[in-house]
Image (cartoon, rainbow, N blue to C red):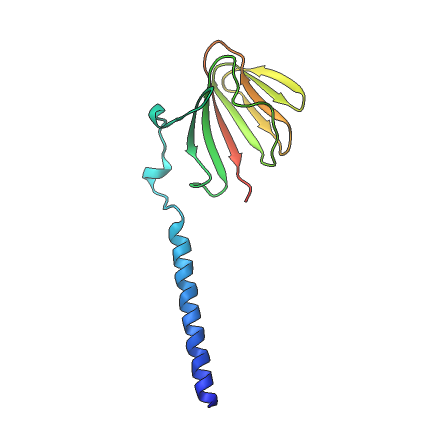
Length: 145
């Protein structure tokens, strides 16, 4: 009788172990496979998302990367993507073209191309286009999990 119980216990453990390995394989296979073809991303306007104030183009989103996102925003003159806001994630903005007004905790600065703007976690921040041409900038953000 004891031998039968031990055999059943061993078989049960083997089955559970095999099921756990299958579950692990399924979990691993759902992660993106990184190749040179999907890790190099060329901007294509037709693949950009139209917004109320211009466009957004995700070079890397949280579904592809492990923690970070990289987005390019194009904002029409005199507009902003949204009002100043805050969130727990830190962000970096990098101006490619145009004239931006950065807002951080009640203060503003106007800047042009090749300027970065760091927004610490939970700080009230914003960016708007105060120029006469489109504002084009990159946003790098770490996704909290």
